[in-house]
Image 1 (cartoon, rainbow, N blue to C red):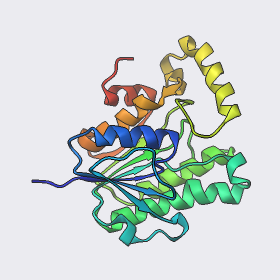
Image 2 (image 1 turned 120 degrees about the vertical axis):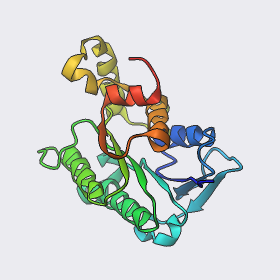
Image 3 (image 1 turned 60 degrees about the horizontal axis):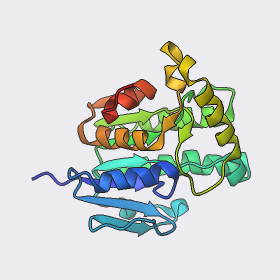
Length: 222
């Protein structure tokens, strides 16, 4: 019988917390490994917490991985500088993907952002785009990149700017159809369900998922 081990980076963030709970309930995975710097709020028999320093992450931390889920991310305010932001949103994520591939992981689900583009004039979107390009070069059997719009859900930290954007998005959601559908506000639970579904039954190859694809993968109607 095939053994499936999901390794999650960023499990203490909003999407990561929703995702880990979703994966625990999914019988497809035999073990869920959370790479984290502090204890998670949830415990389960098949959940293993590995306390790591992402600056010193090694292949040993990734042993057993078959499926990778990357939800790492910070904000410019929390990071304090562009260099610190890039260290988390690019270097940590790239290292996680590279080491996971090295130990034999064949599928990866990467949380990115709508508008990600390595040629963007916006530092945030350029960093996300550069990360996507770096991970795409690692030749996973399946790579699903998720580009949600504004995220909706319960956070442990305050992000005033995101709350403003979320309120704006909700107010004009009815206008977000056609090419604008990709920017619709994304419920964290739907995104987590979609990432889990992509890991279990998503198609092989490289795929970029926006709001319509994310909702479809999660099994929800739009």
